[in-house]
Amino acid sequence: MQTLRYLTGYPQPLLDRVHALIAQDRLGAMLAEKYPQPHAVRSDGQLYDYVQAMKDQHLRRSVPLGKVVYDGKLQVMKHALGTHTSISRVQGSRLKASREIRIASVFRDAPAEFLRMIVVHELAHLKEAEHNKAFYQLCTHMAPDYHQLEFDLRLYLTQLELARGGAGAKSTPAG
Image (cartoon, rainbow, N blue to C red; front, side, top):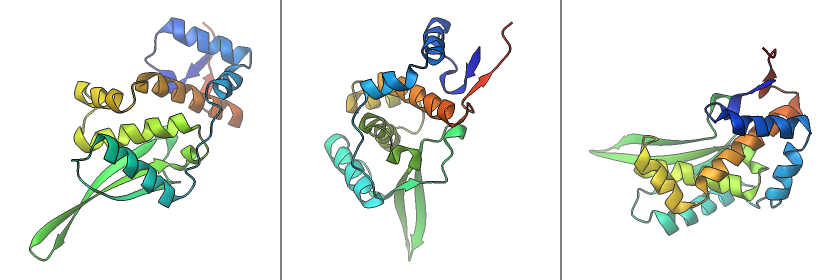
């Protein structure tokens, strides 16, 4: 049996279904069938425009974004798929704040829906700092299928790790 590090906390019957898909070598095919469309957001400039358009649609009154980039240093293994930061600088007698969103570069090649889910997540942090009820309500307001996308993204990350040699799904002795 394998420990699925990206799926900890999910109910055992669901994990059993995932284990069955892995054992039948069908997880990747199932995800490719469900999410066939890659996105066209390749550069940091395109990512900024994509995030800004979503922000303008859902969070017009929130603080402006200073920077949005793909970040190759974000480690998916440490559960950092994207980050949002607020940087304050003193300019003369004023305090100037700038917001940045960084998206893990693994999403440069991910299906379009997964990039959208990560962007929604990071934009929600502009209004809600904590992962609380209000945060998830905002996420589902921007993406009604947010929770399904989050789960499928976890499956996608599991599949990527399995394809790389199993680092995301370690074998443990059955007992």
